[in-house]
Length: 172
Image (cartoon, rainbow, N blue to C red):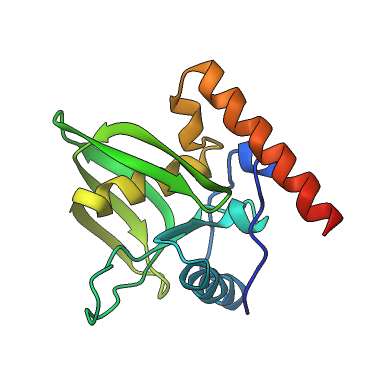
């Protein structure tokens, strides 16, 4: 089931999410819904707070090549356990901040530990777009948006655009 994606500014997007104690059927269903919502948007990552659920859950799939098999990942309680000193810059966007992009610098490679949808502990290294995406989504779980990395003036400008968009959507 597709879910509604919250648009910034929404206070839920600034909250630190609670750890998931147990991968329940309800949370597995939420993960499926989030993947469907993310693919439909279309996006490459989605965090539970973006659909109004304050739990430490993200989904991502950074396979973008036509004809390539998708690789959906579901991560409960994802945690960066190591990050490279080398950085990369990526023009990031966010489903909660539609049509706004900014160059963000992050570690080029990260090692992430998480619990998968079957309750199994997993750990994997990510680089390139995958590394950027997983860091962006984990930020959401900590109440941080990509625009929080920007200078105050640019951040305020984007926030005003989002407030205007929300007013227009409310009238529609």
